[in-house]
Image (cartoon, rainbow, N blue to C red; front, top):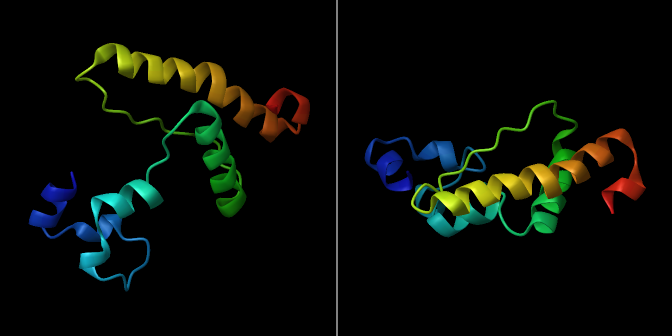
Length: 100
C-alpha cells in the first residue's frame, strides 16, 4: 500500500503531521505509529492508550489482511473478539476487575 500511495502522490495519508517530509514516511514509521498490532495484551494496551489520547470512540474498525494464511487471519479475529474487546469494553464501563 505504501508503494502504491507513493507512486500516486498520496503519501500524505501516512503522515503523522502536515509538515512531515516525505522521506520520513517509511514502512517502519507506519508500523510503529499508525498500526496497532501485537499480542492481545499489547493490542488492548495500545487501544486504551489511543482512547486516552483521542477520547471515547463508539466503533472500532478491525482491518486485517492475513489471507495468505486463512487460519492466521481467523485466529487474529478470535483473539480480538475474545481477549482484546472484553478488556476494552470493561474499561469503557469502568469495570477495572474485568479488565485485568
